Length: 281
Image 1: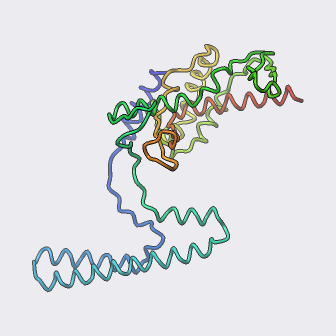
Image 2 (image 1 turned 30 degrees about the vertical axis):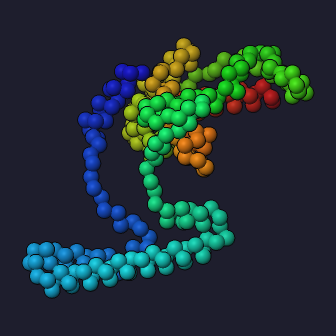
Image 3 (image 1 turned 120 degrees about the horizontal axis):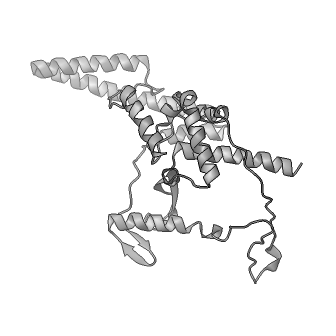
């Protein structure tokens, strides 16, 4: 797995390296052609005033700047008022427009949290507390290792909720390169990368070329019953839901996983659904 990741990333970095480039965003729907023209006139006036230092030119620039600012505010107000009125009967589109007006802030950790009745202020300890809190949320599944005919642990207070699940054994049919390439081509190229640093867009672009290699990796994973460690690592971001910002219970984890792990999970799920359909037929 490591050899594939290193080779793939080296090829990508050689032929399609990432470069930072500043792009002026003019995709705002309320930014009309009239505003664009006025924006250019304002910038031209600023250039002339800066070069000459003439007070009259600076005054003309400030007047254009104020005029441009006023027009922008009016254009935004008119656009959102009209759009919200149109989508008033469509809640999904209505809230999409409303949320687009909000300022987007980067996610940051709180300055302190309370964990196990202890106040924590150290940055590293806060991260550890979030990690332990989110990991403990899966305690209900610790006793879920059930084989054929094994029953769920029954609470003594309520025996009526006990059920027995029978999980028949089956052999997982391996995948073909066509199936894997199809899954690679279906990747959402806008998703974030995981611990393996494999870029979703590059994976999708090279799907037909790397499908056999990825298929071989998936086959080794299934036959050995061992998932590569890098595919099990997730970059977790705590996102506040509501309430006290210092209460860990008011956060939910947003995980960034490897694209290959998502593909493998999807393929295994598809096989399980196929087997279940044959069993229940």
